[in-house]
Image (tube, rainbow, N blue to C red; front, side, top):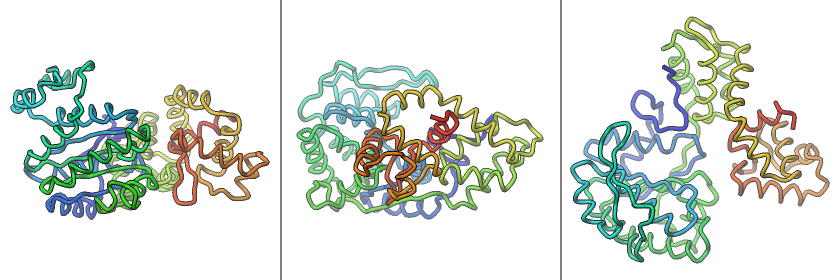
Length: 368
């Protein structure tokens, strides 16, 4: 079995490091604080919260993923889905009664054969459904509420955004015995929500930013994972993995999955194994990357090509600008802003970077 996990929540022995972050989150949860948790995608924010709650005896978690919400109704449905998903079998009947007007549907989890509860697709949410859901949450004991990709609320239509954010804030501020964690991957937008005077959530949570894992700890973790399958990995290759993935744990594990699949028990992995592993990964992602290319302009592609050529991270400086081949700096800026909105790249301080570093490798490999 491949010991590397990516694109999923990991806890227990699959979780690496973050001892100080876990300690700090535990303190916040026990004191019923609100936390604004900021970190890039695939850094392990969700796993960090799950592992922290797992280590706290007697606590449960409501996970509410707001990625991709387009309307107030979407937000309310995500909140309800989070509540339903957190319910233990013994609480299902009570929950059905609490939200009878929404006609919750009882189903069966295909993996565990346990009963599940979900919101009917054609159920109409009443104007006060959000308030009822938040009040239900507040009545639960030792329940940690985790909103992921909270900044997605800023993508709602302006009138709906201001309404839903204000309503959430008005209720949550009264929940003195419920710890809330608001996580987001876009630093500027999360700061705008929690540290801008005009935002309803202004200073409603403590800022908690996480970075990459301690490199020595994660390198040891990776080395031991390969050793569990009677494989060893050279230091030069290990260093190259971290450089290629900009130290992002989720991306490093994706590349390690490819390395594992390209090797056998007893192998010593070194630099010669890198290219085959990258090619395998790019083949797996071919369709997704092709869709990206089909939905961008020529100038946006020039910017991506230049970004790939400089290693996947660049500031808006002379060398990068000249590589784009675009004469007007304003045109480059517009193209980059559009790519940020499409979530193909993001801005980290003064650097523009690929959201998926392997997309840059694919552009170079295809010579686009």
